[in-house]
Image 1: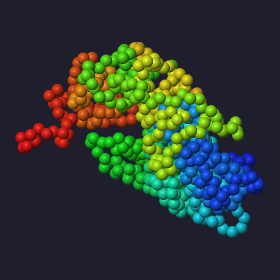
Image 2: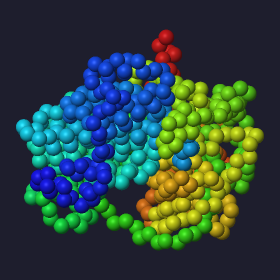
Image 3: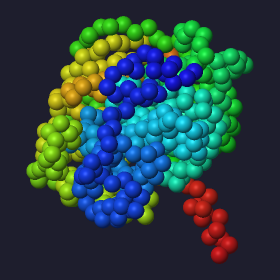
Length: 634
């Protein structure tokens, strides 16, 4: 394949097409007022940026990158300039993340504009590297500098992957031709024999020395991980893990067979499509086909999963890691399973969100009184369905001040109308990972908190408890709902949704949000999995606890689906082994939680066995807490 082949590539004609086939802006010779991208002048310019003012820094960076991408310069100068700028770009992007990570869907207009700014900023620096690739491969005379080419392709693949990450984190559809650019870059790397070159990346601790091929495989693995069915924190962690695991996935050529049909995925480097499972891809044989074999990676993940004990009391970090391992094994280590038949129905459904709301509606009460607590119970701030009193001081209150425009020069800027002038900056030497705790902001108020309840407790404002929406299609396993932005509550992956029965207002089927997709400004597609046709509202607390009870749901056994009876509880304080006191309309009983079926961040689902009252006493004590045998020896 040569340059002429790439020129004839379908879709490569137009003002943005380059000789190599990459979509790039036109560049003009530098003028007297052009931005100077030379190393010395750029160093001075970067040192003068007001880093404490994120808005002004973002505007300056975007303007400089945009201008350099439309100005002719040598590939070496462009790569050096990009390497100098990228640390500051990552610093600004991490500060913008605190207004996006942890948000429920649909996001506000302000958050959408912040996301547009972040996307454009990362896109511009990625374009710098793609232009360098094009310039290196089309330069007249001499051999291609393979060292510079490997760096340029590696970085370009990284920023296209960041585009995938941001789209998945906010459940947005990626830009058109994104996969065409990703696949073409790897094709160019193979042709020029730089795919096996390892490139150091000081801005990526988790993937500091990936080869160009591994950087491409990272994007493939992330796409195959089904990120639109993850909570935002899981999406961020999965992206990091894909960088760490990419080296264990093997890339095979078009003529290479595979003994691992269940763990083989195919991608056409000549297409604008992401990878698919080989058994589902109806593609004619071609020299541009590549196969991703995840058999060795899947076995390594299974080993790591077996080394963790699901029945021990574990931290949230350990539990989250198990969930990510489980999901990766399912997506990369198993063949596709037959899906349930979906039927387009267009039914009108009445739904409710959150454990506490479903519980109240099932009990036919607007407020459920718990058994009398002690005189001064200690409040426990958790998932929001606990029957405790929370004052205004315990809930973050957003700043209601007016947002004025900072960007005046172009009405077409997607983030116009949002001021970043007073954004709080995170220190450049701070840990800026996806799980870093965000700080309060003077303009946007308190940033979103991970696992924040969808409907905060409010004793003064009347909040609707049920909402009407339409189902686009349904199957025996669940629904795809049309969620209109203006009249529906915000939701996250893993939250409970109750679907009201047509026969009884107090009977709700219980479902879980499994995936989200933004479908324009005013619509959200919500994928639900039904986990029970109905539920019983009960009150629970650990048998050793005193004070307020928690709202919980008892789900019946479903023999047809091979699902045991289970208990839906809050995320804390319930764990495997906990003995739970159950109050069902004044009738008390005890159960022991024996197996964790699911933990989504919004609720926990346990399998249980019934125990008698005498067996329940003292079961929650650990050996360090039991001093009975110690008294006589003192």
